[in-house]
Length: 359
Image (cartoon, rainbow, N blue to C red; front, side, top):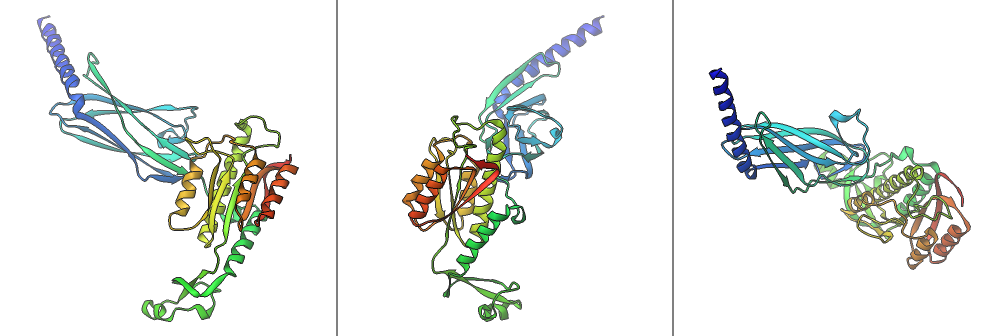
């Protein structure tokens, strides 16, 4: 009997001692999290890197780290788990004195958007759970998920043809006296453009890349409305998938245009996160333009800011643009907006998204 009493007293002292250590050492326990890179495309996989540090000479028998995580960022171990809204993500550790633990979790990004895991709650305690301590640690763990890009083969045929015509028109404007660089020879390149010094230096055929006398400027205009007489600002759930398709299509058209040497931009009657205004990015080019367009498309909220014909009318302030209008429907008011854009000196084509029709 005395042995049992001694055992209980020892365990109580140990737990009490651990409880005191836990209480006074959590301020020296920290957790950091980061994604393996700051940006991904929807559908990509990456890693969430989690580091826990115990900077005290005491063991923490158990420590739990919790935070909210969007269901659109799916942990590898949860591929078969279906959730709605935000969910909790929890990690459990046993941390030795002055130990650092690093864990890598495979994650899949299911949907475009801007995400931040934010603060974490850290709880630690003794082996028997008689005492524990708790604290909140503020973190910033951001990741930006771009819209998923389509292959050129998956572009709708009329739209692919229109884009091809715009690119060919741009190529006809090349100035033989303006050279912006050199690249490796590709079948079909004219022999007159071979850059002989670079060819001799590298042992492979290189050609001059000419700049353009005038930069073709493409503006992709996306209509978030599902119908002409839509009265609500938000889309119904069944229409959101079509809006997301339109965003991916707009992203693909802009990226393909930029890579073909065009200036590109987009406009839509949707706001970016934190704004209430329609989003308008006028055509431009440059090394960071692709990234800027993808980042802004990733941040779009599927909420209507204004009636689509009103957006079209506001764009008549600009001229000399090639405008691709992506809409769920066609209507007299949309056609009138297109007529006004053409009268302002723009070339405009209308393409109906899947499920579209007359308004």
